[in-house]
Length: 221
Image (tube, rainbow, N blue to C red; front, side, top):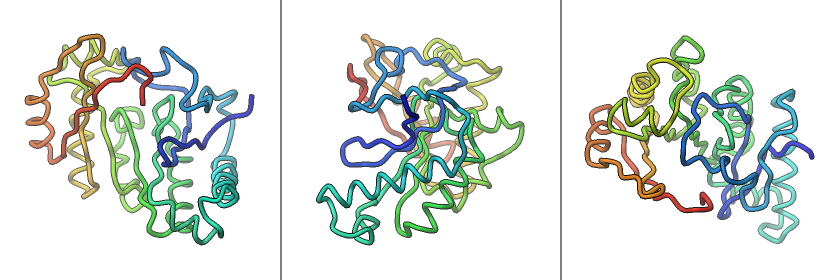
């Protein structure tokens, strides 16, 4: 099985960089299945470079051109309105590769929005504020807030790092401070689980972020 770095969902392109994660969320799709729309996202090896990811992205672009979505690579570039770093693990665990691939996208596909879906643990993982490194490379960041308080966050997210909830709050604030469009999210309805979304929205807004509720669906998308 070859590594699948690039996959498509609802006509949008996603980049999968790792299987590792500092959370073990109870609602995570990978707990129940191996694929997203037929793309097996479990990586065979994590021994790869940004060049490997870029090569697969280029192949993906060419296949879009050949499929009749577009007739020329230039037109395909125009179709690529958004590329999101999101897979079976936490993308910022491969921060150097993420930044290199994002820089490639910005240089080669001008006008394409680059998004990052993250659990918000990056600064804790790296022991520094990495958000300024993302500014200019990532246009929008979606952070999994998951809960209105530390106790419920730990129940839902099952974090593997200390003070994880505070780290998430600080990360959201850092993103907003660096003028990156930031959205804090929660998953509502997993096996009847209810979240105080009003409290979560208040927290997000106080940190300078927007807020979104993701209704849980069985197949994850």
